[in-house]
Length: 260
Ligand code: PGA
Image (tube, rainbow, N blue to C red; front, side, top):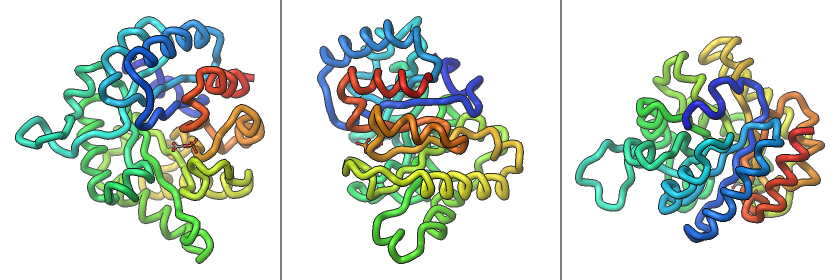
């Protein structure tokens, strides 16, 4: 399971659906089994970040297919007296092979900062799973010219103390907060500029070869139509897809358009 994507997928296209707090176990079962059939025709690496309650079922249904199943959050602690938390070990045990970290909804609504994201990242990597680390500026940060500073702070904070060799298990997702769930997609120019900035920051922290190899996804109102243009930029290595991943048809359409 954990070998399905990312390990051999440096700068290959990785498309991950983020279901957020949607769907039932029965819906997950039929979605994943249909996607598994479709996925054999895709040339991209596919991930689905499902709610905790569906990880086990989704991973069982996805077994033998090229789909990786992941989680959308994890505890910064190891197993212990932490009521309501779910550890990296538990996620892996349930069949997750990757975890989304630092999504802007978690930063904004659950007050996660770079320090806690960094703690979670260390747990995920220590457990042998991959991490999709989300970064991105708000509209007011962009409008006040703070995009670069914000991204620098997020990247340096999230990757504090991470070893070079661990970075091969990390994906960065650039998700401008103003583009998430709004239908407003970032312009190609913005995406290019920020993806290059991310690579520069990673190069400074971990060296050129790691910066060159790391997969940087774009996320924020990706749909089957805009996916083609976004992916035409060599700086974009795939997508983190929210709304458009909820419908199997539109997610498959994105996968198809990303495989072209
Ligand atoms: P969206 O969400 O595709 O609905 O904009 C993206 C995300 O939150 O990862």
